[in-house]
Image (cartoon, rainbow, N blue to C red; front, side):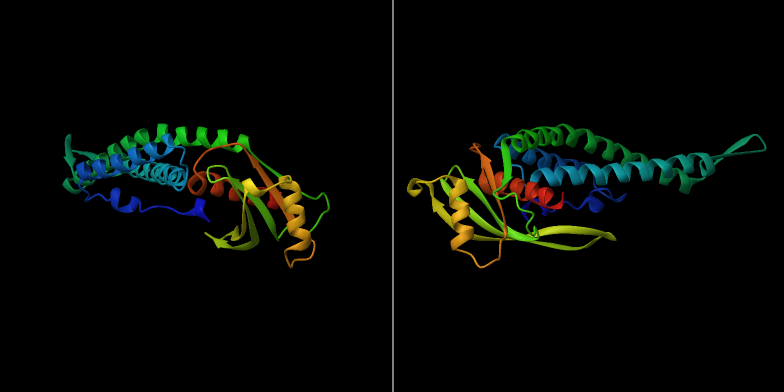
Length: 242
């Protein structure tokens, strides 16, 4: 599953209180600029998932450490005894570290947010222009079947076998698709419609009994591996599960 993969973002390391904040800013800036560059080339994956996951992880870290800072200021930061303010050195040190961390996280969220939103807008546009339809109205078993997806850049009609799997992630059930490429047909030698191609393949060229078949329609001239294929995989899983 291409869309599920993440690149090497060590958020824990980036937000360690002993970090070199200047170096972390440089590292994150380079990464976010790379995502932005890929979006400008209409390449969505895995960059959009990286950006989204970074946003949620940073948001969680921000909330957790804001709560720690509020507690520290309320309970430990200052106490009045005999009209003198006693400031605990350790609490002051921790407070300074928290302030550095919070400043970095807020900066990182602000940096990433517009790039993430750009990717989401691009994804929405592509979803609207990538249409999936079943080739049969019969309520056949959906757990295993075929789908077709045209690579408009290479002018090839691709057929894939999919197999629905499920497991556990973070104590929650998770469904995924195992996908195998079955056949590629150059469009220049095709004389029939995509629907007829798929129906003929299912009827005469595969071993499953009455499998489900889906056809993706798209006129997008976008990168196939980084955008069209993983987005189709995501839409197929959604359709199977509904």
